[in-house]
Length: 297
Ligand code: G1P
Image (cartoon, rainbow, N blue to C red):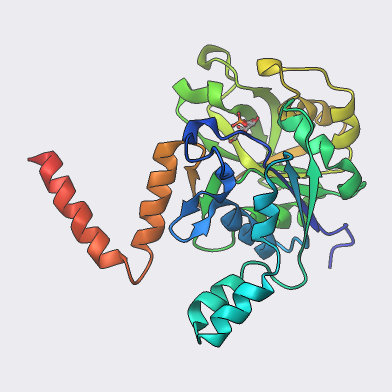
């Protein structure tokens, strides 16, 4: 058994405006948009719980209280469903959050960037290593979830771990981009990391996706950081500083990522989950075949 502190807390930056989905996101936070019958944020929270997280920290904006409400016990709704013997919906509502998991909230007063959002959670996290999950990046895994994989690597190595995947070189400006070298344990050590480089300046085509396991030192580095790419306080810049004193690993996770911050990604994720749903799969497959046939005709 490792004597390293366990990763117990995960920070979810959810203060964004979701402008790409307007008008749907005018009154409903982007993180509550559904993929099939669960809101985006729930997939991310389930991934966190599977990785052993016990405290969910939502970094939110004043008017996004609906996200926390999704995770709040709803006795009236449960009583209503129980009275009507609506067992399945009742189980689904009760299963939103395991009993031992708590949800905390902190407000990000100004939209100063991802690094700033993470810094807002400092008091709630304390000094311990913790996870960050960006719910827009939805990762569907067959075996252990992406965060579970990364927490295991942290437990084994004691190092911060950043989720990465290869991205098309022409899209590096959308991502943090890392150059890596294998170490003796067969892990990838990050040598360079930059936020949103132009393709010609990118150190590789390995894009950072929204999964991080970070040591507590990241907070003091974020504290001293000025604005970076896009005029925002960037988590990537703090990770670059962290690498001056600690080893930071990259993990090309097993699983498929859907960029649910984009309309196309949300549609693709919905199709993927619907094709894995017993009730929907065969009818949807027939529909898709028919549409594909039309496209090919
Ligand atoms: C953020 C990070 C970036 C990362 C991306 C993954 O960017 O700053 O390093 O590659 O998430 O989704 P954003 O998408 O918030 O602009």
